[in-house]
Length: 119
Image: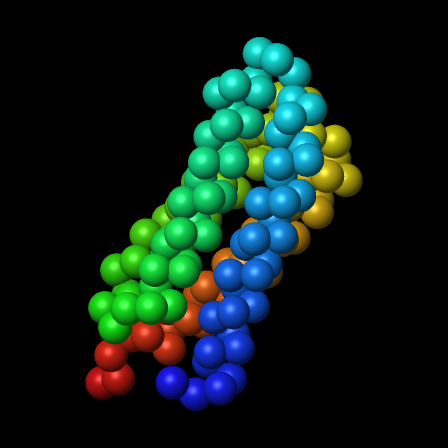
């Protein structure tokens, strides 16, 4: 594995980890009626995303795991948007999360592309 590719994988994992830390500080402040459903699902999905990325790093058959991570990332985008629309997140907090998810998505997309078999 090239040093650049390994570094890119580490960056997407680190960005996801950082988003989890940020999220944990925000979901606990969600209104009670959304904290235990939307807040917990957001956190659980972020943890699942991190796990998929780490598993992908250490297996040769990573494409399926990366595609699962990509699908989960799309779910997270909608959940964050829902949190904003339900007034659980302020607009600036949502903006931060949306930018973080976008950056993770670009890195993940690049990783998926480099993992596809060359034709």
